[in-house]
Image 1 (tube, one colour):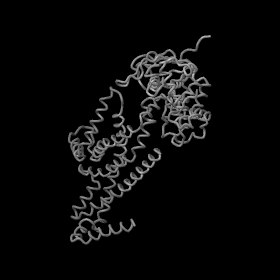
Image 2 (cartoon, chains in turn orange, green):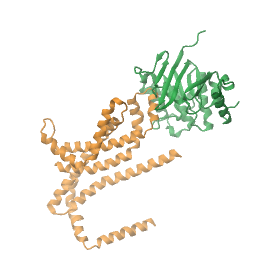
Image 3 (cartoon, chains in turn yellow, brown):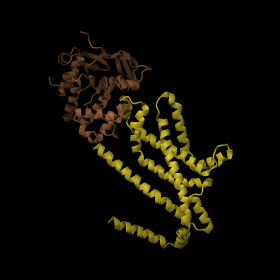
Image 4 (tube, one colour):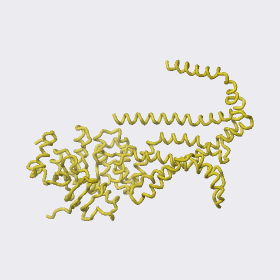
Length: 256
Length: 253
């Protein structure tokens, strides 16, 4: 029954689109097979740069995010400045559009011409993405750390472990396991935002599509790059769904 | 014959949570090999007292000494001290992400610096002794409540503590699982382990304790040998408490 309703609804939608008066123009401008195949090698070449940006940034984000979260949860009156710094940092970088930081760092810092500071747009792209996403991922980690019941830390401390050891061996491993689905969500965001780096002169997938589009006045290259993004983000999204469903089942089983 | 040296001594211990005064001047001495049971209604301060001794809570006034050395105050190495005092919690507090064996070896390996092999040999021997050898490679959530609590006891014992604090360790268990846990404690008592036990199991307290302390609203109202406290309590409030316990069927007279 569900199969029938899916076929009927999608068939109907497809029929409406294909039979609308402007469909031929739309098809030629966006879904042109000739331009698609012509643009694809260039676009794919650009996409390799996005994957490099993503992988380098992601590893750094995972490390720095945990650092920020630990900074924000360190107890004791003496460490208030540390906690405040972490709060200000994540408020700032989560509250301002990412494209602003791309311009600010990518053009602003090289313009200072400070000796020793690299001039490479790839470097500033990674820097901006890491600063942006560390703020998000730090919050995810923090939620995870706070979800581990204080009695776990008490049990670890009661065995004579220091606070750092209790965090390392007991609290952090449990926290990280719990936040894998939301972390993957942020991966998806980061993967998409690699396109921001095109603004400061990195020739990646978006810039390549623009070049191809400018040469032919056809928009199909953008669709080609969209397809490449979807190739990565859709499977990731499904993995997140599966993990969340598994967590739910585990919670229900534990509550039994 | 001289009395054994006091292991643990509490003098005038006070503890408040905000406006609520939970402990109001506790004086208590626990000698080596002595087993002391703390009884009293919920909220009388039993758990807080144990948590203060293990420095999981910081006392507001008074003094706690272990073998004549003060353990409260800013100059104490908290981590070193806790290695000498084992605590078992009502809710087990096992580490769910670690197998039973790793739960038991975490303390010896990380706090005492034992090698993995050394810690595991000792842990397996302890697990064997308490009938848990075949559970060594299971995760805690695969164990019954009684088994989990026995693992928690083994985890504390693996640190070879001088003193064990037991905080209502059977209160979260199904009735049919209580005995297996209490038997472990009986065996420890026979072996001469010094223990301070907060419990609602009056029959158990009567059997095992050298001394029973009745806590009432943050103070030790009455203490003495179990025969005296349970059969001929001096204080009216102790009588009332025991009467309620007998009516609830938790103590056979």
